[in-house]
Length: 272
Image (cartoon, rainbow, N blue to C red):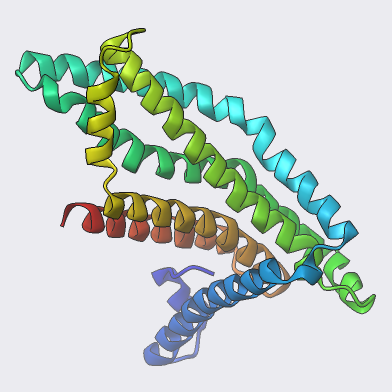
């Protein structure tokens, strides 16, 4: 459950320090569950025993369902937005005599910052949050308990394929949209001509310096882990315990807070 000042009034008869302590304890417990689940998923991903026949089939199904149906639905709008933004920036830069900086600004703002964040939010809304809800329903129906009683690991069987598929979908959409944006940025400035390819390649190398590339890769990976694990943690725990009515909103708030912190950290790493 997320922190809400109104939650302090949910425990009548307790003193104010005790109410605040309960809110802080629940908040810390929610974050601890996320970190613990991330560690468990990492161990399972690296364990060969996690890829049995049934798990491989479930993993392949989730990889396809969470990625293939949304590729066109995300890439086409991202391409249109990239083309429009590129045109706006180029025309504006020409009017101020700054045309040499137009493409670099487009790549820095669009490719380095906006598209990875947009891909993460799209995957969260389209894939991982619904998967977290499905996991909560499986817990409420007793399916996870039945798997545990039968000797199977519910996290390995039901959660791991969904989490890996969410990470894969986020990375795939971010990479594909960035490549499309780079191609459209070139076409928007130079058209269907190879004359600008040397200068474009040189500018691309200047923007994607080793440090910037490392920050970009780490940020995209952290985005994918955040949108994949936080909804899963909310669905795994909140559904089976006396969750507050706003527990799902609490999961969303935690996810958006993590994405914001990652983005701020990447900005600091790139420009300070």
